[in-house]
Length: 232
Image (cartoon, rainbow, N blue to C red; front, side, top):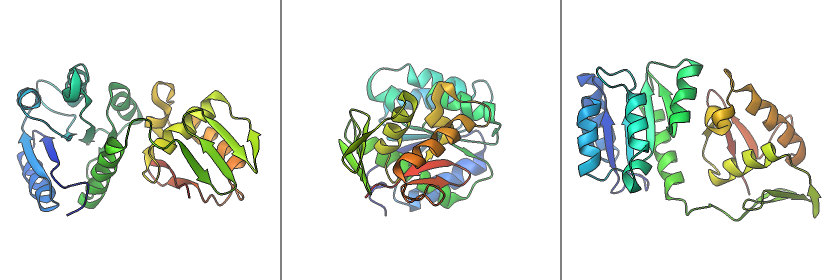
């Protein structure tokens, strides 16, 4: 059992009985407590009566889809509305992914999926959720030092100019250090259809923090996903 799984309660929402049962069995074996719902209406009732550490949510469901449920959940006050959401769906067009992140999803995984990857993503979300507010105050990136709170970068004891966009991007990665972050999540409301705006900013950041930008040691690409910051 992983540390992230200990005593964690997951809500799995999917109208496919087979997938719902398989997910419950797999995640329970991984050490999670798992409750399931076949539709958004049942999920609403459960979310208001039980505490969940994370919701694994299908998008394509009858009556009310996963996007509508996410909008409803994020409008709830307190811990109910703050529960992390991992969307698990066959709808994987860039527009769908962007909509999911804009509504407040924490991650987005396409079907068909590898169960091991799902587990790793759940554990990464839970690690981020358990990080104290604000995350680390300062991180070390080789010869660079980044003040996360201030958004200030220093290299060899000399200030390095960051644009506002670069500073925000580096802060977001620093607060999820050692965990992959989806490029659409990093882009937020500024996301373009392919997430290329973030790719451009990452390239510029690498020139400022990496000794060899072509072979990055600290700002790594996670293929098919996004980026990960790996400070010292």
